Image (tube, rainbow, N blue to C red; front, side):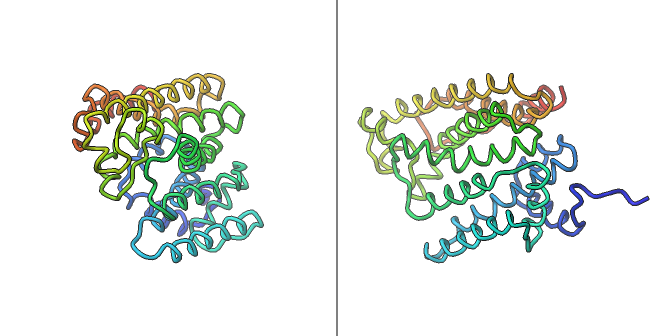
Amino acid sequence: MTQALPLGALAEDIVAVDALVRASGTSFYHGMRILPADRRIAMYAIYAFCRVVDDIVDEEGPFDDKLSRLDDWREKIERLYRGEASDPVTRILLLAVEKFDLQKIDFLGVIDGMQMDGQRAIIAPDLAELDLYCDRVAGAVGRLSVRAFGDASLAADEVAGALGHALQLTNILRDLDEDASRNRLYLPREWLQEAEVPLLPQAALASPRLGLVCERVATLAAAEFARAEAAMRRCDDQAMRPARLMGATYKALLARMRRRGWADPTRPVSLPTWQKLLIILRYAWR
């Protein structure tokens, strides 16, 4: 007897989406291996969607061209919720939407977040804009993810929002130098002004007072990690395994940055392999 494929998807679509995720070089590919096959393939399709729209924004070229392609994806998402799909990513997403009740507003939110980042260089956003940006580029992905993980409760949505903010703030602190090289600075305007740090990316990185702002952002991220962990305790324990794994990994990265300090934001920070393995053993396989 031929074994049914995950989600009932076409074999060639699974191969195409798997290859897209694997080619990105992200640890996400292996991290999601802990999921059952249906949920894993759904998550790969969600990641592939995010990767494709993010690449549109990151490519060289006029923004009007990028906006047109983002609008094409908005139309693809609209068609998805009319039961229509035309390529490997959307065909698997269609199956995932039907099985896991993924919400259209979250797919569109991801596209809106990418557009925020592409239509102009984000430099020292105010706290409200930063909060909206984090919700769109990370919280919306989280809300799609928790449903694919197996929990569509209000508590799971709270996990998605809090953990999404925590992960994005950690990324912002980790990528200060890379973002500045692209003329971007995601640290909040109000806190930069209070610390008398310049609002221009390269000047901000050279400021001896930058660490005051970074530590405030790190404190906010730590609070969001704590809020996510509290919400996880009200969720399905099995469904939260991937969220715990991601949260623990990024929380350890944040702790490592805080121990290093903020005197030289150009110095890269990453977790050693042994620490990543310990986190996997503790959270993925418990």
